[in-house]
Length: 229
Image (cartoon, one colour):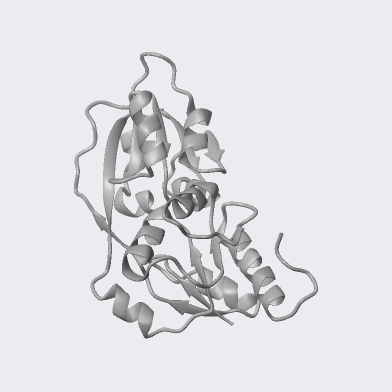
């Protein structure tokens, strides 16, 4: 059983798959590029960080945020921020909108969003409604020749860890005809909006949980008596 990894980097997911006996096929559907955008003026009172990739593009993030209250989307993002010396006050486990509710800036506070130039439609609406200033530190772009690479790498299942990867895949190939596993409710919602049938959502928003979910799906597909819900 070959499972397609669509995120920019195969690791650590490929190793996690290997540890549960799953063969990984890696065709990145997205690449992340720095925007070189300047941060908003001043220092925030509160900040929402939506991706571990922010740490990659803003290594001096701790100094930029100062004493701001910080909520991270997912434990992977929280871990990346801790390594930069950023104190994380809360971790959202059901996507950006839920994490935004955790942050809950008071009226008059300066609140920042730090993440991708194009967040999910639901998160973008919520940010605008709450008056967040956006610092878009990276762009998500589709690699050249994606359709050809997908055609030349056979797979029996596909995993998505972001809505942008789902969009890129659908634009290139249409909705997948194989089982689909996703990381997080936000990705699941984006997939559904694009006409993609999601077979399973990882029990927790971690790559380890996604790998465990895929292993269960593979066992079921290969004849296990215990199948996915």
